[in-house]
Image (cartoon, rainbow, N blue to C red; front, side, top):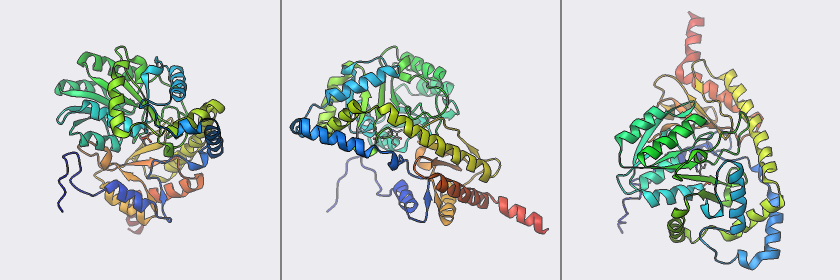
Length: 405
Ligand SMILES: Cc1ncc(COP(=O)(O)O)c(C=O)c1O
């Protein structure tokens, strides 16, 4: 039988990132590859109690079909959180989704025809790139520095691509770089979007996990024309297996999103929505988030200290103030896949930079995750990584030759 796939389906079955994660998952390897939250912080007992209460009080309605836009109690609680974070919205602006991944997919489905331009940070979240590609988007990457997307380059990209539908940005502790966009640039991004009459998709899974520095208002806070679609998720502040996220959008978009959501999955898991709403009614979720922050702050600190001790001079790395990731740039024309193989030989793993780039890849780049390993594993793993980098760029060899001669 020959399968006649649509143009949306990738031509090849190869899954380089899946293959990397498989190798990284071997028990001997200390893996900084995945983007997994620390499972020991999942509030298992409190969620169990919330689930028990839901079954006792609302079992039948929680197991019934429900509305596409989501559970009203949960949408109310999210509205209050959003208001506290500087987003001016009410419950009619909020839709529950099956994680931010679905919010990205629905938004691309809603706005992108084949050939339309989507502007992204370079590098960016690889699964968003996969979604945009599947809808035939022309993806334009804009360079970043430590302050986020460069606004002059964004301005140019918008001018060069009059068919741009939206800018996709991860302003806080970006995946993969850990960088945060300044308040000034957030405001400029909105001004550029206003002038060009294009939308912004603000993807913010990590903003609540700030462990250093001061909070910065979301891009949506600067949104004067209601053109920013803001996405967030319970994946990093509660647990990713819940598969619950939310969108804050212009009310006029709600009926169309509701229709698109119905055809995608009718609605997000109703039982899970009830449970999370009950959890939030009975517990202070900010208390829980501050526990996550404390652990990640410490792990990032340990990783940073180990990097400073073990990496050779000239290697650059980001200094995140929150989130889950550090971005490393090894100078020279390093093939990161080869470096990955050397690292696996040293029983340590990361995600090479390649899949995060929409076009030309910057060699020698890779992403490290610090949320999912113990402090001892971080110390040992970073030492191994430093040794592998030195081996690859020849620091040890040069030293040995000099000693012998
Ligand atoms: C930037 C970004 N957006 C979206 C997602 C998907 O999150 P969710 O689990 O809510 O689907 C992730 C997951 O790691 C992410 O890093």
